[in-house]
Amino acid sequence: MMRPLATVGNVNVDLILGPLAPWPQPGTEALCPQDDTRIGGAAGNAALAWQAMGVPFQIGASTGSDMYGDWLRAGFGDMAARWPRAPGRTTLSVGVTHPDGERTFLTTAGHLPGLSWRDVERQIDWPALAGGRLLLCGCFLSPGLAAGYDALFDRCAAHGIGVALDTGWPLDGWSAPTRLTTLTWVARSEILLLNEIEAMHLSGAADVDTALEALAAHMPDGGIAAIKRGPLGAIAMHRGRRYGAAAPPVTVIDTIGAGDIFNAAFLAELAQGDVATALARATRIASRAVSTHPRQYLRQETPA
Image (cartoon, rainbow, N blue to C red; front, side, top):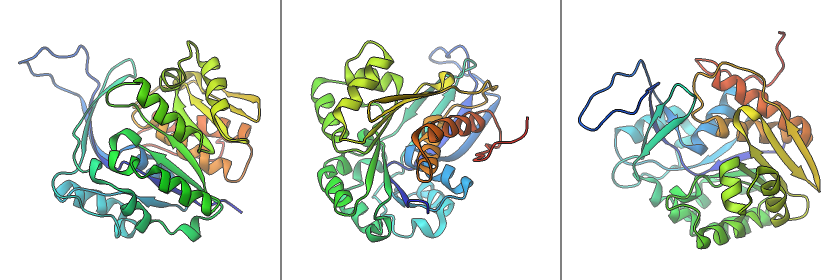
């Protein structure tokens, strides 16, 4: 039986433009060959992936009180019925893609700072999630919620819910106080899901393998530290054992949300399998998603 899943955090609007090169000079105009307006944010991307994979889940989020908020709610239907409406505008991210697969984000604060622990507490059916896992995303974009993380971790512990943490990048960088605070969250998380740059900055390590060991040492017994490495695949450590999964060769179309798709796939596969299998399958699913348009989230192997 599959363990129940939920995600909590940032759901916002993504406006994707590109590919663009070089970056335009101020005062000029550049044409982009492609555009896409879609549900985004780390929690939003994970939720979309679960929907596409047919995985049941809960989601705790919010929107602003504008047309973008209405549009986001329509995308989630009944699941958004309990989302609060923050006064003002919904958070908007403009993602500009580049020919080398990299991207640049420009994001407004919007509604996300107003999301609180009290909001999330009312949205999640905690008894139904008992024994499952909660993916906690966008930590630095929702400071109101982050202020209530102690209560959130306590509630999860009371119901036997493992927290899977993907912090994202801190808006002011990895200062010493930010690192200390983040490591207190890591110490209470069952699963850690970071990209390699985040992992090295948080741990202070000079290479990704040392970062993996250092972060795993901060976690509770039995915790799983995973680091996403893009085209290099992913690595993980669980109970002192290191795992690795290579990414299949693909022609990348759009990497925006790739790490969030990996998170969703890893938790879905881990809910009914072991770490090695979940790591390999999540890497393949994320690779498939970023190389297809419209995106495909295939959980099963397809013939070559």
